[in-house]
Length: 385
Image (cartoon, rainbow, N blue to C red; front, side, top):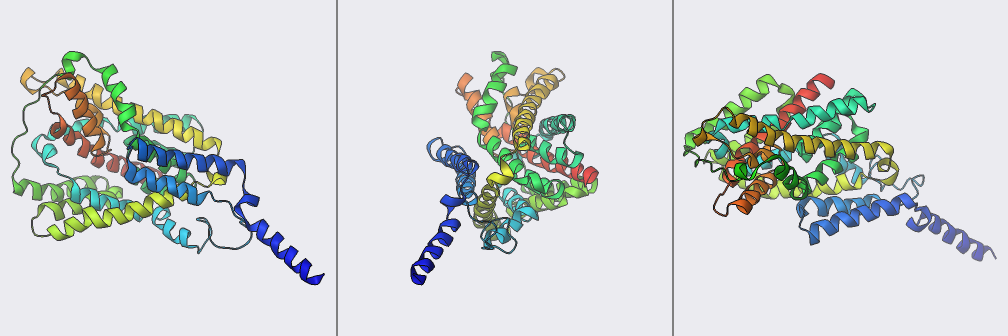
């Protein structure tokens, strides 16, 4: 009898530890979202390098277990393996490393050759500050509003970095929102671009960019660092690593370091960043009314940012001579989704003129958007931290 009771008690204890016993409908909702992200990545090829790690991380983070058992397996349980890996997100370690890789793989030639394209990247940041004002009106605290608004830059690492400083409790929703809209660039941006441009504007041909010397490419990251970070030193962790990576690429004597930063290091950090961001979306933390507001605000910010770039080019063209006019289809590339937005500009341009290649022109505002979103994050951090 005692033996049978012992077996029964052990079976009951095991049952209470299973995910089946501890599951709620919220867990299954988030598991469904994770599977949807993986499906989008595999079948639609929507940013698979981001959505596969995030989607699988959602599956990991939403396997239910007894949080009172002291098992130390959950991402929010101090000392657990997942919690230690998540420190790279919560403490903001991963985003600067991603920026190092972005700098090492980015060619700033288009921006150096035509510096006025920086203005397009700057104009796209209106989405960030517009969303900030709306978030305040919806009742978010100023620091939370700032962290939410940065979604408009379409820059996942910047969104994670800023939310880790200003609103750690909202980081999961902000990060997933930012990466989701980055992945959906091919769906969201083309209708906006068509709506705001005429057929005549879409076939504007831009002059080929002037040749850029190696010396200019080496000087650019040094001058870029000094100009931006002397004005906005709070952006130093991101911009410092971005320009450092670019100098490794362009100086000609550190190609091995540049290759490591742009390939192996970036891949490793992306694997950990995506998985832990996904795992942080535990149903109890994620399925709230605030999350719905964050996704709505992020979508609005992204729409404003994309439209602002296109509208700015149309206005700018009023003051440019005919031979120097800019095709407004590259205005969408002012967001920092590199190089996705630039590809959208090029693809849409080819749709209306099969010989009008806009990719290199669009890369100018695209890389300017990376710098602009980091500067905007630095400004918000300086005011709100």
